[in-house]
Image (cartoon, rainbow, N blue to C red):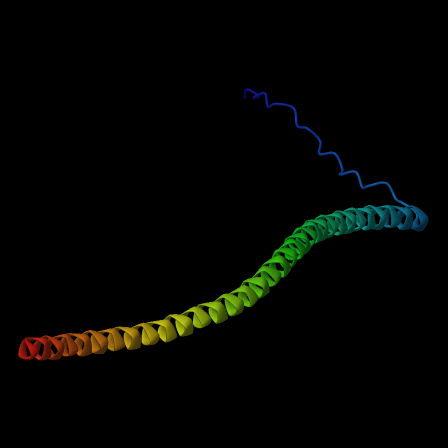
Length: 141
């Protein structure tokens, strides 16, 4: 019989086990891992605090701006309040003066009407007397 040639068999190598580490080595490794985790937490915490500080500064800038606006408006309001008070005082004085003018005008018009009535009466009397005198003069002739 002919012998077939088979490819040589490879021997399976035994899997290498990880080198044995001492308890101390494992503890140091765990501590290093925990240290890295703590460092990550620390970095995140610092970043969060920085973000909060930036937000606080933005709000603080807004507060300062609004306080500045408020002070400006209060000053304007004070100026306008003073101006309104002066206008009100002026209006009171001018209204009193206008009322005095109205009173003087009414009294003057009333007196003028009396003068007109008296003039009309006087003219009427004068005409009547002129007619009476003319009649007397005419009858005396």
